[in-house]
Image (cartoon, rainbow, N blue to C red; front, side, top):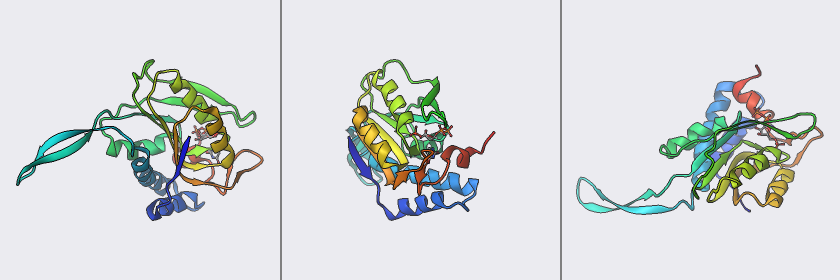
Length: 207
Ligand code: PRP
Ligand code: URA
């Protein structure tokens, strides 16, 4: 698995806003949306393109378009925080949803939804989840996608714990991980440290 840490000043600035305990929900959502727009540039570097002709006001010239946009797969809930920023640059990409909640006692992923087509026909997929902690949720999502004939599987995360990166790599399911930071460690309740807290709650509150 290729791991790319997006070490860009604007990404680090958005990540700092996300980490800050004093960032309110509105600013948190905005910063996540900004960061998604930056992470997706790295995550789509190897997309296949095709040559097109384009007429400018002055001449005809050659241009490029994405040959087949990847399917975007946010992991509910927190992955939705990255979806808008990704669809802004890939407006024609289809979206499939996977719902997984981590059981906070067993730390096991508990799936509750899946709207990914049964056969992806070799289409690439971008899997969105801001947090890669133990890796259980992303490994569940990638294993479900692997059974559906995908092309390249790229996971797009805001933060990862070293333990989660190792688990995802060992699973052999993902081709690439794009992340803004690999943090220090997981604490005793499997939260990423220094982290940003509970991403889903900071985006959407607790019902
Ligand atoms: C969080 C986060 C990841 C998962 C990471 O989701 O958004 O999906 O935990 O932990 P893991 O790597 O140990 O599986 P959560 O289950 O809290 O659900 P939510 O997005 O609905 O808040
Ligand atoms: N889920 C989160 O939202 N945050 C963590 O740090 C770990 C899992």
